[in-house]
Image (cartoon, rainbow, N blue to C red; front, side):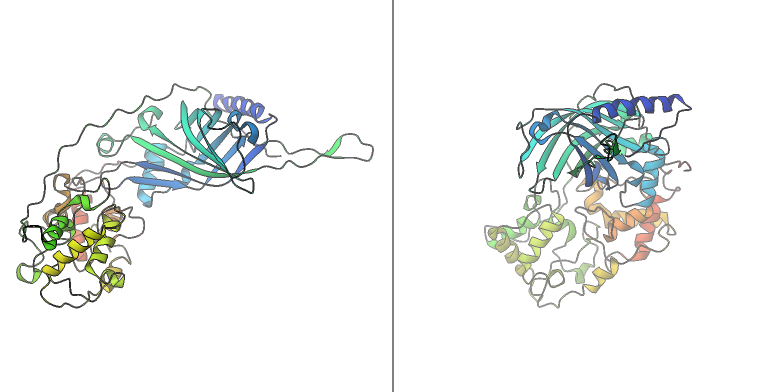
Amino acid sequence: MRTIRYPTASPQGALLILSSLLFASLAQAADPQWVKTRGLVRFVVEGPLDDVIGETRQSSGILNFDAATWSKGTGAIAVDLNTLRTGIDQRDKDMRVEFLETSRFPRAILTIDSIEKPSAPALASGASVTGTVVGSFELHGVRRAVKVPITMKMDGEGKVKVSGKFEVPFADFAIVRPQRLFLKLGDTAVVSFDMGFEKREEKAATTTASNTAPATPKEEPVVIAPTVTQVQPATKPAAKPKPRKPKPALVFSYQFKGNEAKALGEKLFHDPTVGGPGNKMTCFHCHAKSDEREGGVVLKDDHIRAAHTLYNSGQRPRFWGGFATTPGAAAAICQKQYMLGDGLSEEQNKNLTAFIEAISPDSAPELDYRTTYRSMESLLRDPTSGDAAKGKKLADKYCMTCHLDGRVGPVWAPGLYEPDWVVRRVRRLEGHSNKQMPNWTIERLPDSDLRDIVTYLTSPQTQAPIFNRKKD
């Protein structure tokens, strides 16, 4: 038997008892009970540089259903909000203290009252079914009606996998954020869950010699009860975002004209459609095509690229730390790594290779990739001890190829970021959540320059911090 104790010396305690009794009565139904054995809960919020992604495996779940009539099932899923992690400790603390207020509201609970639109009447072994959960979602002391599309699948061992996704508008759950941050971050979290359940075997009842009362009663059902009794109406569908202003393009000129392979390859070098859907990055955002020995790493547009120029790169013996042996193969890795693609076509590979070879008259040694690996080993020492005034000028040189007016990435917003988060992103350290931005190595961006940039972006002298942080 599992016992859940609630306080009784307050109105909240009385509500807890009432709700627990209500859901206990639902759990006493004849349907078998299924208990969560594994699972992942994740949320995604649109952010100014990266989407903010948080997740936890600390959750519990109960389902009451019979496989023959699975759509008549009920249940609940509860998440321990104190265990959500986004990869940055200070951001996690802000999330717990400022927004979710987990000291008062430690759990989020999705309650399943019924299932609409089942794709099949029964859940068979090895098959999957879909439907729409009708129930409620409790967060931050607010409970609202929800409808969540789900998929259920039963494997050959009788275990059930349940997955679903739904949107949580923060304002509808009384989550108040600082206004500037509200404008910089999305106002809705997309919550998804993927959980495994096993049927809970009840202990068989045994009797005494006189065949009277059972000596070992059956174990009582596990109950997950909401703490809020009033269910508010469902949230309204989110309005479609307004179309964004077009991004100003980088200024460049073509070296080759016509329909030769090298000319077509140069066009691909400047074409974001080489990448996958939603990509805005081009090869030119990271690489120059001019000789850096003549003009240095600062190009005519006054920007510094994150990666080495491709001038004289075609005759290197290896690329990408030895993972690629031809320029085309190296370009394909870049396309997958930074441009949201799934590989180059044979024609694209041929044309890009022809272009790179055309701007590579001399043989060149392989790059020393130890610099790249060394750059991703540790955080920056004293990241906020630099010069903010210098940092602003350096940010213009290093960052504005992509971030000027949101060309590829968004415009910088000083005061919004955590120092360690900026370093993780720039150096691509663990926890960076960096989708497209290349890593700036200590060779291209020395620690001293990065320190000045971080100081500029995070110093109170530049911009008042977003958070006036509370104490736990």
